[in-house]
Image 1: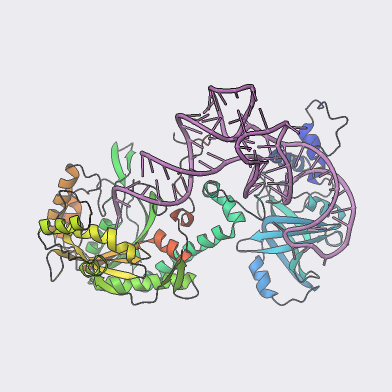
Image 2 (image 1 turned 180 degrees about the vertical axis):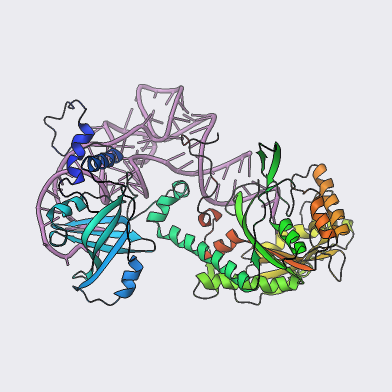
Amino acid sequence: MPHDDASPPGEAAEPTARAGDAPAPYATDAPDNTEPADLRAQRVAKVEAMRAAGTDPYPVRFDRTHTATEIRFAHADLAPGTETDTSVHIAGRLLTLRRQGKLSFATLQDRDDTIQLFVSDDSLGEERHRAFDELDRGDWVGVAGTVMTTRRGELSVKVEECTLLAKALRPLPDKWHGLADVDTRYRQRYVDLVVNEEARRVAHVRIEILAALRRHLLERGFKEIEGPVLQSIQGGATARPFVTHHNALDLDLYLRIALELHLKRLIVGGFDRVFEVGRVFRNEGIDTTHNPEFTMLEAYQAFADYHDMMDLVEGLVVASARAVLPDLTVRYGDLEVDLTPPYPRATMVELIKRHAGVDLHPAMPVEAARAVLDRLERGYAPEWGAGRCTVEVFDELVEPQLLQPTFVVDYPREVSPLARAHRDDPTLVERFELIVARRELANAYSELNDPVEQLERFEAEAAAKAGGDAEAGDVDLDYVRALEYGMPPTGGLGIGVDRLVMLLAGTPSVREVILFPTLRPEPGMGGLT
RNA sequence: GCGCCGCUAGCUCAACUGGUUAGAGCAACAGACUCUUAAUCUGUAGGUUCAGGGUUCGAGUCCCUGGCGGCGUACCA
C-alpha cells in the first residue's frame, strides 16, 4: 500500500514534536528550519504523523516478485536510456537517497545486491513523490515498478508505487566510511552487516563453508546427529568447562567442551558414520583466536583408522576451499597458503628433529627428555613424562614454523587419553593434527575402543583433576560401559570450524567470523550483572 | 592476569607545548536543481570530549581511579 497521498508524513512532523512545548525564546526570530536536535525524535515524529494520517509505518507483509540479483541477471545488457514493460515488486532497505530537482534516485539494498530506484512525478505523481522524499536512509520499502536504465546506463526500477515496510528510527552510519569502531561492529552486527561489505562477505564465506562441510559428509554416508550440550561429566577434551545449574533437578551441569564421547556412543549403537557440527564451550581466555563458544565439526567412521581420517580431512578442506575460493590458494596475512592435496605427512618426532634439531621421543627416559628441554631453555613441570616434554617442544618450536598444510602424525600416548595405542609403538598413539599457517586446523585419531584400557586412562585423568588440574576430565563410566558393549574400530576427526573460516576468509581475528562474539555486556543494556 | 594503545556530534575524523566560543566531511533540517549514483550548490542546527575525582588562573589535552574495546604477552586447544 502506498503512502497516504493526502498527508505526506513529513508535513506533520514538526508540529507533532513540538506541539506541547512552550515556544523557545529564540523561536520568534529563528528561521523556520530550526528542528529538534535529536535525529531519532525527528523520525519518531514522522511515525506518529503517519499513524495520525491512517498509514501503518509497520505494515504486515509485502509480495515480492524479484530480487535485485534476478533483475540484474535478466536485464544484464539493457542499453542506456531504455524503458521496459517488465513489472517487478522488490523490497529492501534504502541505503542512499539523491534528489535531483523533480527526480529522485535511491539505492535499494536487498538480500545480496543493490539496485537503483528512479522516481519522477510522471511515474509516481507529485503527491506520492513528495511522500517518497520523506523517506529516510535506512527505511525498508516495498516498490512496484518497471525495469529501466537511466541515460548513464544504471539499471533501475522506475517506481510506480512505494510502500514503507518498516521505519528506521536510527540513522545509518556514514555511507562512505561505514562503521569502523570494532566494538560497535561486534555489538551491533546488524548495522555492520548493512553498511560493511566485508562483514557480509565473511558471513557468507562461513555459510558456504558450513554447507560444503555438511554436503561432503552427507554425500559419503555420514548422518548428522545432535548430542547433549548439558552434561554432568566433563570429557572429550582438555579444557576448563562452564558450569550451569538446572533448577528442577537441582543439579550442576557442564556445558560441553567437545562432541566426542556421545558421537562414539552412537558408533556403539550402530550408526557407522556420524557427525555433528555444534557449539562447544571452554571457560578460558579470549583473544584473537579464542572465543568462549565456538563451533566444532566432529565425524566418526566405523572400520576406519587415522589414515582414512587424513583422506577425509583433505576432502573436507578442499570442499570448503572450492566453495569459497577461485582456486586452492589463499592469502593469509603475508602468507600464501596452498591447499592443494595431498598434504605432507610426517611424524612429530621427525618434525622435531627437522625443525628443532633435537632427538626427542616419548620412549626415552624422562631425565633424557628433560635434558633436551634444558638445552633448549624450555621449562617443564615435574609431573611431565617424556611424551609431554615432546609435545611441549613441538608446540613451542615446531608448530610456529609450519606454514603450509602438514599432517603431524603419531602423538605421545601420554597426552591423548582417547586415542588408540600405535600399532607399532606402545608409547605413541595413532593420532594426527593438521597444521596450516602455524595453527591446528584438525585433530584426529584411531579411536581407543578397548574398555579396560579406556578406564585406566580415565582414572589417570581423574587423578590429575583431583591433584588440581582444572582442565583434566572425569571418569565417564557410562562411556566405558558403552565400550564394553563393543565399539568397532573407528576413526574420529575434529575440525575447528571457526579457524577454517578464518583461514579461508583471510581474517586474522576469530571475532570476525563469529557473527556475535562474546563481549562484556554494554553498560545500561540490562541482563545479568 | 600483565603491558601498550584507543574512546571527541548519529557516523568517519581534526583540535600544535595546557590557552579565545572544541572544528570538518557525511547524515539531519530549510531551499535550488528533470538522469543522479560518495550527486552538486546555498543556508541552519547539532557536543556530559567514556565516567568520576585531582592539579591549574585555565583541562579534550596533565595526574589518579573506574568502564569498555583493540593489540601484544601469559595461561589455554
